[in-house]
Length: 283
Image 1 (cartoon, rainbow, N blue to C red):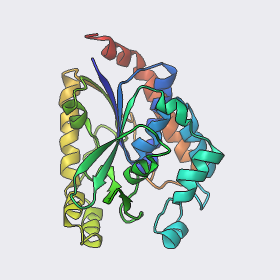
Image 2 (cartoon, helix red, strand yellow; image 1 turned 180 degrees about the vertical axis):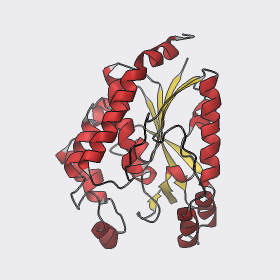
Image 3 (cartoon, one colour; image 1 turned 90 degrees about the horizontal axis):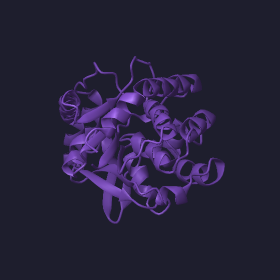
Image 4 (cartoon, rainbow, N blue to C red; image 1 turned 60 degrees about the vertical axis):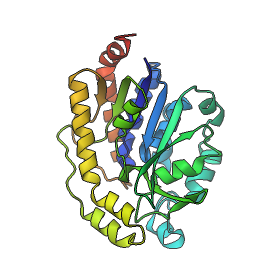
């Protein structure tokens, strides 16, 4: 049976997933594909490159560095997260990403992006993180805080706008076993957000993107319902925070990052035997 790992985004809240992934790495959990959305894509590549601890390390070290993220960057460049620092200097000099191990991992890695002109999700197969870094950057480019990323004449932004938790896509593509790492507690339901109306106003030249942003909560809650039913019938395995941690998607407190990461570690360790049993069933 083919196995997929689906990683929700959520900005710095995604540090929870980094904790979970590090336990899965330690436990030698094998997957055939990863579907990463926004921060889920940016953090998930480290699973394929087998760089345990890298995500929490560089985030804690640089989270208060204005080159990493700041409104100064936004004013100067149009990007809250500085492109040159985050996607070049950080990964190629300061905390080097293992491109070769990623390429040799045997994992099909899909970065989810939103086509700004169509408002639809696209699932980009990343084979080389250095050559295809713009798709990763696009997946994590938050509307209102990032410039549109243009690749081969197409315009992209945050994958979470169109498909926040792509479990249905993973199933459609033939993955029978799905492990989904969510970054919200079980009781969470997404309400209609004022941010969606603002995005629709700001991106008025792209009405389909604006409509996708405004209706995001509907698709998100449909994904939650799908996951709940699949987990109930033991066709899917969900890992999500066991308690609420107050953390911003633009969090600048290293202690909060550590708390969220540690919760991911703890939760993953508590369910690892159940996960192994789920993956073993039907082999």
